[in-house]
Image 1 (cartoon, rainbow, N blue to C red):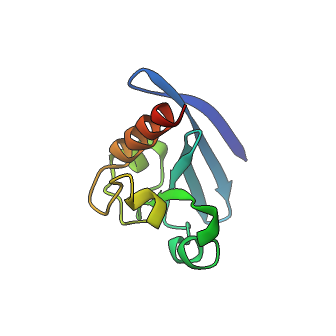
Image 2: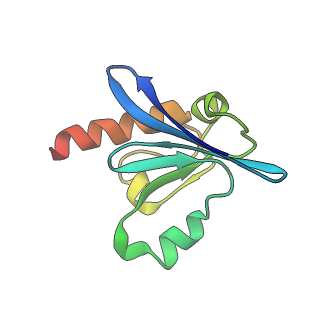
Length: 107
């Protein structure tokens, strides 16, 4: 099952995505320019093989719900995300806030 729902973060709306798979769940919160995701996200692949795309993404491990993803510390992030200050240790919700702020500056 795939469930997509709008999620309010401060005065903005982002997309929460949950994918129920056998023996695991994928959880993602996406903005217009980047996303945070559960431990299934391969940051190394994004930084190495897809580096030319400048993908803004971060990963939190050990999370099973959207709420946990937003509250969990970021474990790793892409180079493009790190340039926005999205570094290991910040909360998922704060990573989303930085993506949203970057999106506003780029508009």
